[in-house]
Image (cartoon, rainbow, N blue to C red; front, side):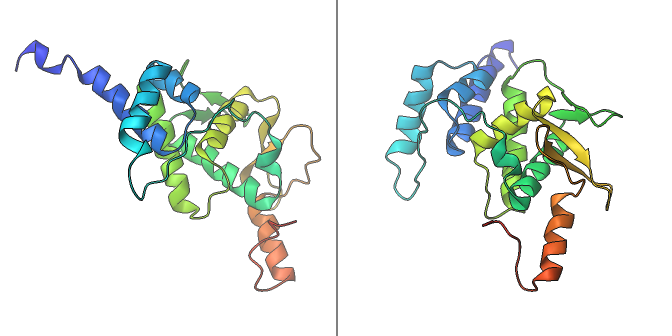
Length: 197
C-alpha cells in the first residue's frame, strides 16, 4: 500500500458527512461547522444528489438554526423525546453527565467524527420515535443548549429517579415526562398522551 492511496480519505469523509446531514435537512451553517466545506460546495452537493432525485423530498432549510428552548419542554411528549436525544448523545460520547447531573460536551469543537456521532444519535432517535417531534436542527439546538447548562438542565424525577430535560426558568414539578404520561393514561385509558394540550 502506498502512502498516497489514502490522501483523499479526509475529503471523502467530509463529503459523506455532508450528504448524511443534507439527508437530515440540516442547514448549511450546521453542515459547514462539522465538515469544513464551503457553503458553495454544500449547495452543489445538494443540487447534485438531492434536488432532482425522484421520490426523495429533501428540503433545504434557510435562515438561522432555531435557538428557543421552549419546544423541548412544551409538553410531556416533547420533553420525553428531548430526554431521549440527550441519552443518545451521552451513549454516543457526544455529551457526558457528571456526578452533579451537569452536562458537558465531550468535543471542544465540531469536526467530522462529531458530526457522524450526532447523525447516529439522531437516526437512533428517529428509530425510537417513529413520529419525531424534533427535526435535526432542533436536535442540534438541544445538543448545544443542554451543554451550556443555563436555560436547560437535567432534573431528577422524585417518582422514578430518572433524569429528564427541564427548563431552568420554568416551574419544575419533579415529575419526568414518562411518569407524567403514565399518570395521564391511568386517568384516561386509551389516550397515549396529552401532546395536544
